[in-house]
Length: 245
Image 1 (tube, helix red, strand yellow):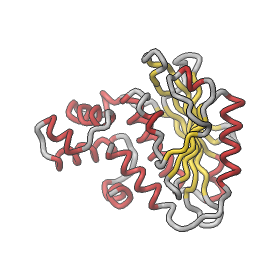
Image 2: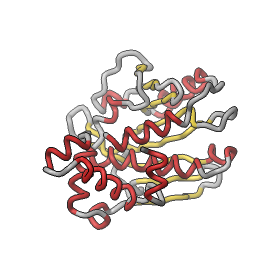
Image 3: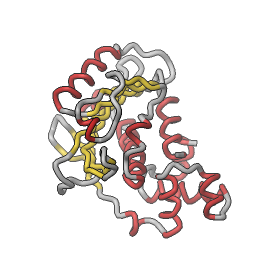
Image 4: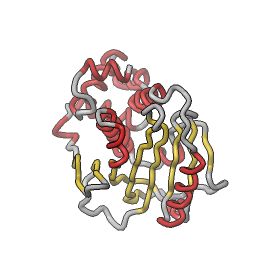
């Protein structure tokens, strides 16, 4: 949970100040994506800390209840969707979103709209069995202050596991893969780090992980920091601290 909280704090802090983007336009786009692609679309307003979930018939296949379209929630985290993602893939998703955010922050404003994330994740369906799902994510920055304002996530049930990498950042204008990544956690992380990673992915807070593993909260925090460094979420310890603590 804390990795997700760090990303949340970063995104929300980065969007302070009033922006003038017309979210109604993006709501219509999310609705159109949902209808045309049979996708579940989540539009998150970082400034207002709200999300709008547009559900197609695919939602029924994934066992998601359709109560209004869109469903509005007071969070940028779509819990109903996230709780269905395999714990390992859920943690990867948070880490990859951090990497994507960091990459775009280093770019010029006019370049950012050219990039998106494509990944594959496992989600439980209506029968409580894991299915492969294609996940795409786009960030929309305010042209008035250059800050991240909206995030659009699209979920489509995939035909198969395929050979698509777990995570890619692509330039949609040039048709180029900027980052192609399939992380081998077992070779990168120590056994203890893998333990911590598992519990974080299942939603446990650092204090709970410390109690389960009979170690201190400081030790859990150190393991968590090492995990992010080894997975190259940030280039240095200090940069990580400055941005996410």
